[in-house]
Length: 196
Length: 196
Image (cartoon, rainbow over all chains, first blue to last red):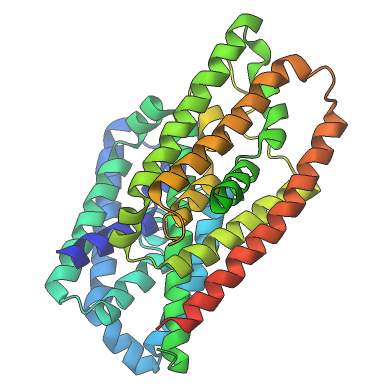
């Protein structure tokens, strides 16, 4: 149970719904309001499908490419760390996509919800925490569900909380994420050099 | 006793009373003079409550997410270092300065007083075996009283404290903070590599 819970929290932080709120709002600005909830749900389901694929076949992919757990841990840790620094200091990712019309898969499902860090975490959680496939999937589903609910109510959230509270929430989540990413990095280094 | 003072100084530096003075001034510019004192006290109390929450629940948060002390130390050290660099070279982010009307919680209490770095330091404190809960609490209160007094006195002293004096004080505090952050980083790396 504990494993499910902690993995779900990490995944939730990595999906970063609060950080993605402004992006979602700006991308969906040009679509009809009554279609927005549907689009967010569709993109969410696509992201869940992609992450589930990596959950199922992540290990085989790693084996095929001869990537060790240790190096994936290190790479994932570095990516997560950079992302979390962006969340804290708000370097302003200028990736404001000027998509015309209705967004499909890119940029909402991939890479905003199912980005590189989420994929790395999904692959890794099968390995180190000895979580079973069922447990991992439950954790993934939990994190995904909360993220999607937050994103579906994006317009309402922004009206109630205001951009500043959302910003503060994002930087607090970034703070936890830095610690998680360093943890991954240290674990990867230890594993690769047999330090433990 | 020694630890309490040391911790209180660190927390005081992290709360950045001097660096926050100009921001407080500009946010409170439109507020009538007699209400400023009240607002500063209210925001400070909110910040204290937020920090106390992390003091109480910090360890369980870390346990749930399976973050080790050393990882948090490394991450906190890096974040503190970046904040200190910002303080020294004076890239003040003018985030949230264009606030209309009376400020409430955001941006004064969070994230200026209880920002990511203060939260990181608070969570780290709970991991220090030399520091009991009561000691950490009193250090927090000491640091909080110090920065609140400075903020309150700024209402009177602002005429004498020119911008230049303030930025000099800020740069000096930043300098001390870089050393403290490197200390945190080194300790984190050492324990991460030593403990197995």
